Image (cartoon, rainbow, N blue to C red):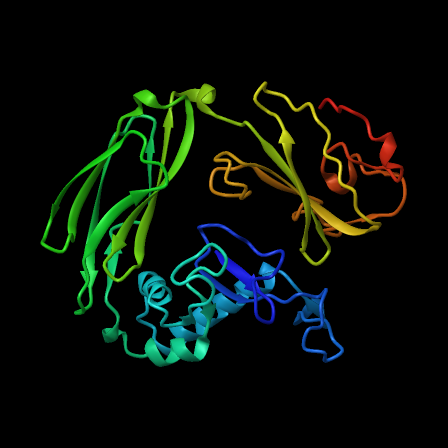
Length: 337
């Protein structure tokens, strides 16, 4: 994922977790730290031909995607793995924050000019390449074979193996003196509760980079193995800026019995509802239920306006019980649906 920075630091709304790979300018419209009389946002089109200053990881992420597209236009042989390696080796970014990869900036701040100078000739990059990046073991398969190969002529070796959660995992290998070759990872599910799981396996390399793949697996079968402990309701303003979220709706009994209440000013908003299966506070990931209100498939506006008391039941062809109540003290204690 991509983190967002303002003039010289991580933006207050930015993504912060171990999945951050790189950072890029995302702006902060609440400040004018360069004193130019304009908010420190990213100039972008709001609707049709209207330009305005925006902020968000939605501003930072396209800069990374666009930069990679330009690099691939310059060198069409660049692969996804080479882009990953270039970030880890700081060939298209500059390390900021804590030395090495961190949860705020990833491997560092995007530098397109630096990337263009290095990635024209890929012979200067040495990295580890996995045979796949994700695998689903289901509820019966107990092992998976993955091959890690060395690409390039520089010095590189596998120094360690790590996992987000090593519970039940073991491995055997058939590798060369530098750790490159075939690894077989096996799982013993006897200590695991019924449900669905996702895990990440990391190959730590001698140059301080990591190569990883995701594993999905489950215990039990049928609907009884599905774990839905928490649903998240999050509210955003019309520019996509995160306002608030509630991790409180319990679905473990098979029904929803809760109310999501946000204290916000009158304005224009949209709401996202998602499960958080792995409890990592990141919503709308692989395998998680994710929906927006108003629906992105609606033929109406993609936001709704909070303006005094109103009943939004059935609006935008989306059957969610939602009521805007100006007097916060009148919010009910429970809604059954």
